[in-house]
Length: 207
Image (cartoon, rainbow, N blue to C red; front, side, top):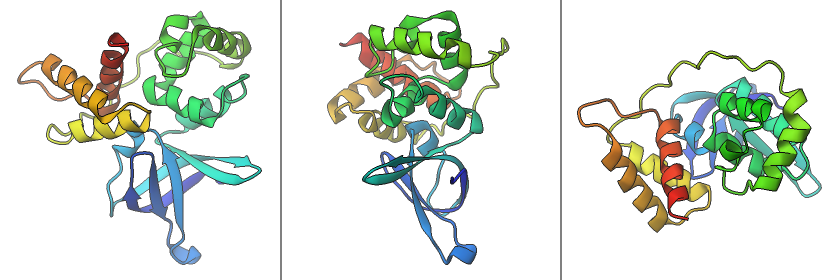
């Protein structure tokens, strides 16, 4: 099993990054599927480490990458629930941070889980029923805030993230405009995961 990939980022797309591990492997590049917030932290030409999970199918081998082991662990746990495949598990982590997902599962919070595109009431109830007893202790403390997003770049990064999750360019533009209008003037721009979740909430209000 490939549990991590470390090397130079040679390409970043809407849904994946290519990491050249170099060294003894002779410049072998791994294509890694990542959530938008993870992709936003990668820069072409820079070194990066991704915690990975290899999903094996009859006709494919797909490597999914995450910024932290907790995300990878939750990704793998979610797939043990009936009807949850890797794409949906990745979408859940893209919209909700791992602690929020664990709290929602532990408390039976259907409303939070159904904020994820593709998760309806019945599938949320099924995840809660099957995973509630398996998520382990849920910490009560809030996680440390993530680093703020660069002010000039966040719109493009959020747009790529929304399009990667299935929304159209037009919807992404409208959501980004609404988020930008809501940001307090003179204050630092929030972190990419925060901005992405705000944009998804805006899109949810227009359904």
